[in-house]
Length: 79
Image (cartoon, rainbow, N blue to C red; front, side, top):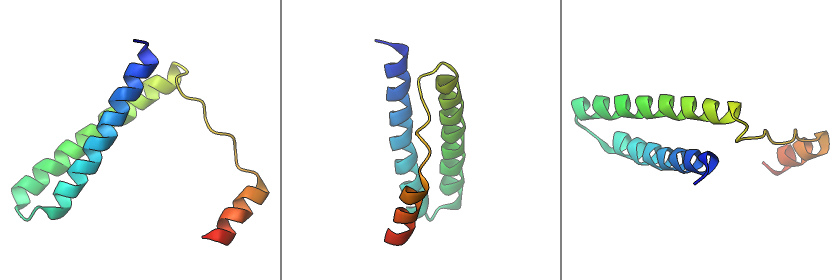
């Protein structure tokens, strides 16, 4: 399997984990557990960002084209 696909798979997995952890944090009354989950979430976010930067440096990601002024105005109008 190519590195690009493996990295993308890990990033998608972390994204799902972060969503799950955030839900658990929101619903946890126990302060100790809440803090532990927050620490886990923060660590996962840091790892995700470092992996993203590495993938970007290797050219796995290309930035999206900048929005044109008419596109920006259209979004503003429809919000």
